[in-house]
Image 1 (cartoon, rainbow, N blue to C red):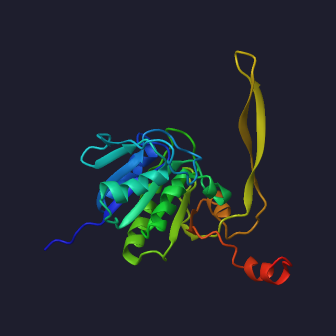
Image 2: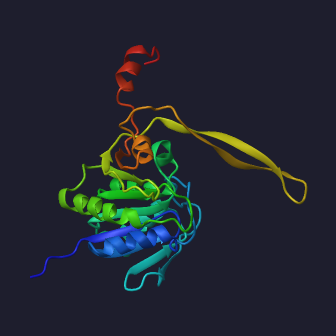
Image 3: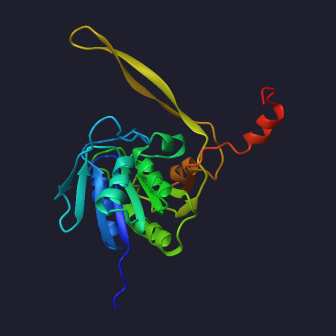
Amino acid sequence: MSKRKPLIVVSNDDGITAKGLRVLVEVMQEIGEVLVVAPNSPQSGMGHAITIHSPLKIYKSEVFEGVEAYECSGTPADCIKLAKYYVLKGTPPDLVVSGVNHGSNTSISILYSGTMSAAIEGAIEGMPAIGFSLEDYGSNADFSHTKPYIKKIAEQALKTGLPKGTALNVNFPRKQSQEIQGIRICRQARAKWQEIFDERTDPYGRKYLWLAGNFVNHDHGDDTDEWAVNNNYVSVVPCVFDLTAHHAIPLLNDEWEIL
């Protein structure tokens, strides 16, 4: 009897027609049976938002020949919920993958990232999950160097599993003349965006603001995702959704007079 192929749910935040999603679907087809549930429009920067005040729409898509695919009006987190509970009727897939995002999701960007929110939603649901991102925001970015590493990482996750409640945040450097140096298991760098609000005027003379800013890295360690990507490595950061500051609990219990 032939061995069952693993069932892999694929999503993203750039939308169902994004080049990075097609790359991820192609690689996952080499590994298992693929189900795509992705947003019908770009959802970058949506974080872990879910749709609760408006209807969710989901339709079959013919974007990928020979692959069961659906486009959804909701967020990346919505897509993973719909994949498990609506399309698969509660049956969990063997793996959830998200991406490949057009743009880096290192450091603090994980909190804003729709790509990683899809992966983290998978982890919340108890499924092994990985988010993939490329440090290139171009719509025609070159993803060719990411494919062998995507396959290796996905196959390893299927083979050995992931710790409970953990999703992997994988970031690739942009395509360079030099080969990728390898894979690094990293921690999230302590860095942030320094926001700038650019004030502009519309054709009717009304003021509006456009969010801009600069990424500031205050972390000079050589064990971070920022260091890895900047030195032409693939960074892999294990992430959890438990945001409890466990180290602060005894401090608050000891020092807060109101307790």
